[in-house]
Length: 402
Image 1 (cartoon, helix red, strand yellow):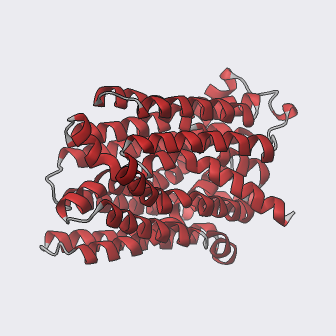
Image 2 (cartoon, rainbow, N blue to C red):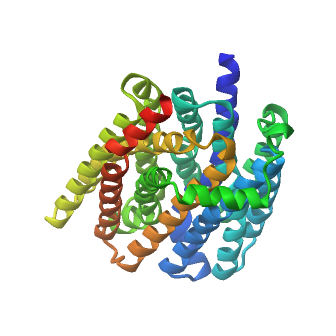
């Protein structure tokens, strides 16, 4: 049983990591893509934003479909589409073609984002779900920790196009792994009541559930702050602070390791103190650290070591927030787990794209716009936590338990 638990986490984590791998491996290439294709910083960032938008919107389709036809068929389709999009990106002749193909690639990748969360809910709830979700994120961590570094080596040796050939290989490996090791967790008997009409009705139920939405947006603004870092850190650390792509990759990996390492404590902390207190304390710590970083920046303290140290601490707190809020949001919607996971993912990625766009409007070459975007998102997550996880939420949970 224990071996099955870890094997499931391994398979789901690797499937979930394929899409983010196409983001993280791509980050060190952003400046060189601009130079190679004669594109501006804004145009190159648009290729990243196109991927995020499709990664979010496509989940609205995959989630209900996975409730209707099972979990594996949408995963097969998504991985094949992702592979086709990746090959197209590797051959793209200009930035406009690259943007379109990144959008297509994202539509394929989002299957690996939404369906594994639904599989977790199919198999477990509560602390066991938090434990499986944190293990999934541990495997998922291979992307933000190793992808930028491996991407920098590929770019140095073979150029930026090699990144897309590499993620094509990852998609093929994902297909093989899923075929061999992942069972279907949505049996036909549970699909009977799932249809387009029921999916629309389910979205209506979810959109009227303010507690579900509150939990989703706590995680959304938390992860959006990380997205702001994703979109801007390579330009700031490489162009503004003068790091090499390899040194940037190591700095990025350190912050990702903090996020992922902390997430491994969610199951134990949740079992001991409760998931809601864990979220409250973690969001408070995250907001405090990021607002301190902004205050120091506004005071003229722009040292790279200070920024990286505070980001490392802050992203550790964030690692406790994202998986825990996802588990809490899905716990009450097991019958429509795929649809709920889809809406969760869509709202989080669309929020992230909006935050990235807003930060992009005030980009000035310094770290301040990125830091402001991170701190602002952390503050919103804190305010949402205060409004969502107060006495009314606790009373609702107590009533349901009774």
